[in-house]
Image (cartoon, rainbow, N blue to C red; front, side, top):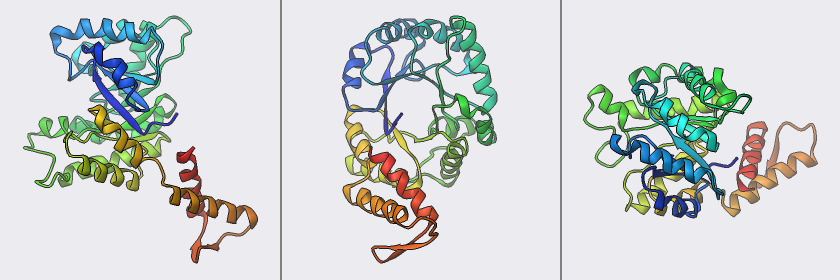
Length: 283
């Protein structure tokens, strides 16, 4: 499953669901958490369940409410029979949170039904930072791993997570990097967080390009206009694909060779692994 772009949609705005699905995003996230007021939770649950029961155009996740807020079970009960493709879990704190959500999923699912995979938002509480390595224990249950730069500063009393130029301050660079390594350590997709400046197209393109450069495999979006630049950033260029193919072909033509030269540059096993990854992304 390729997840370059994952577009959030408020769960109480069903008139936006189809538009989001047609945006070009690889997945949409129907939200029951932050974008939906407490008064509208039930209406959002019913709208999401109705949408999921129809024909879906793209991978469709549902973001439920956090486990510590006593709303998660009601969220799951309302939507699980419609079989969402995955569940996004906010304020997750490592493998124990995955196990806790699985208990809820099993209690609300039909006997013998398979459980949807989970995409945790893994850095929204201080304690969560110290549990990132445990996700490898739940690797079979993960769709991927992502992080957030908004709830964590609020939780610790920080005034912001960003410098004046939009870059992250040091603590949140650490959270981002740890999420990246935790995702790859668990063999899961590494999904970067949202870029909040909707009208800053150049800034988004730069951020998304950096995310792919650093090893993220996709990114979340908060507006349909962000989908195309994100998809472009996480799709290898023709030149990248050509060079990657040349490396793969060179090793295929020289079996047993550990190091060889391609276009005047020495390449070895890590370059071959990276080349195969680029070709996989281009498919």
